[in-house]
Amino acid sequence: MDKLKRNKNLSIFLIILLVVGIIAGVLFSTVLNNQDKTLVTNYLNSFFNNINTNQFDYLDALFNTLGNNYIYIFMMWLLGISIVGIPLIIFMLFSKCFMLGFIIGAFIINYKLQGVLYAFLYVFPHQLLSLLMYLLLSLYALKVAFKILHSIYKKETINFGKMIRFYARILLLAICVLTVNTLYEIYVVPYLIKLVI
Image 1 (cartoon, rainbow, N blue to C red):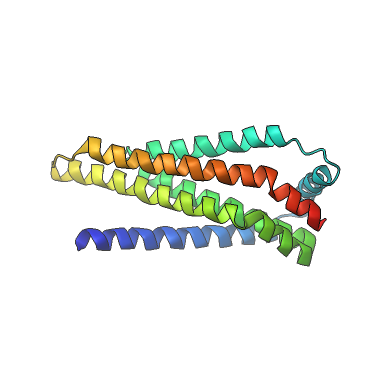
Image 2 (tube, rainbow, N blue to C red):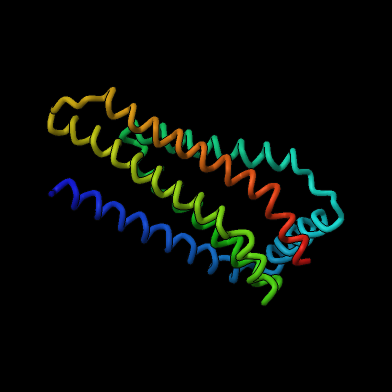
């Protein structure tokens, strides 16, 4: 019962962190100075122009996005098997949510009502699935880190092999989900945005 309560409290904490991260990202996009706003606008205009004129480099975008996603989840996973990783896992989840919130805010600020549609196309469904996957990975990474910390503090032995086998399955699930989401993001989202443009 105590274990269930700890898991529930940790899940609630991470969900609150996720929501706060997204809101902070949206708010940050509204308080940028004019120079930074111009940089963001130019980047977004260039992105849309590349899609519209068929100059979007799909292969380069695919390898960059996959590489970034894989590095991120491997780092988060590895941090779970170290005690010092606890604050870093929390920061990594927050920064992912913050970046998503920033992109949503940037779309809406720059393109007003049409920006809401762009933000929706960018977020739904793949970014939401990715966020849920990062949330799940963070939850299990923190659980593993806390279990190791607890066993050291209480001087108890744990079945490390069994724990790592289950934890490795979570990593494999994250890799599969993020690979599918990346393919959708690179090959489907630009097509949908082009239809809207």
